[in-house]
Length: 353
Image 1 (cartoon, rainbow, N blue to C red):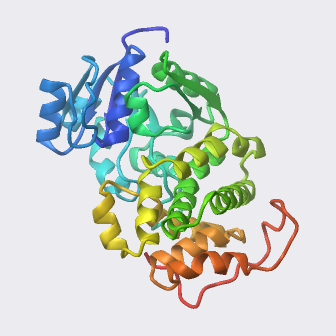
Image 2: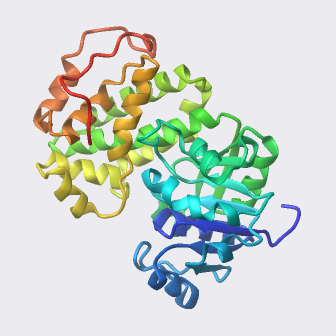
């Protein structure tokens, strides 16, 4: 970074937003978190902690927090957004007028918007009025708790503009956090959105008592689904074998720190969706994104049987004990990502989660 300290803002005081604020501070940025809870913001300012979402972690002194959106965005060259994907448009619209004219906006969100099937970078462009060249996406094997505890990890910073990608990468690079730049925004975003759905499927199977073979099968075939959708939408094949693809998928599907995986386990054990959400707390983006991902797949004729099964289970139309059998009963075919444009079987009713 050419001029330190760089001013940065992070919108959203959840676990990932708070963690990324710490990452930026470790990299030398002065960071302001913005959230709607005065109690959380006060604790960050005065105690350097966010016990509500990141208990036991001391935040760097360079991180402060406020409920005042204008104050958070004032002078911020990098603005990272970590609010729930399905609420982003509503939450961010009032902040548009306070964005600096040269600010770069970074999506930390993982999802596809239900009402429009838009990727989150597209939502940011629309709601904040910024061009694609000033938008970046961060995604990878980035479990918030481990990063907050400074476990070594890498991530991908994707943008259509190389200068934007390099700026964001420099703003978050630290001894324990290694960013790689990438131009494939579509591929990186789809990996981040769909891996949550696959993690739900893995969790459901594990909650049913299935073991490592089943887990490996769902992860591997899930990567095929992500790749099919990405290629149909113009993504680069190499992205899916990298950190944003296989790396993030393995981390999210294998770790109990993943809310989507943990939620799936609870559903697999027989809890209703509402009870499972209450048990796991936090935001499991895969629940709502599963429907929008499936809708997006249908618009381009991509077959996504695991995603469809998750949607059916969450909607109560497919019993969890029948999910694995339904997937294994599909017609035999050669392994690979071919057949992306075969007709997609439709359920008896439209998915509704």
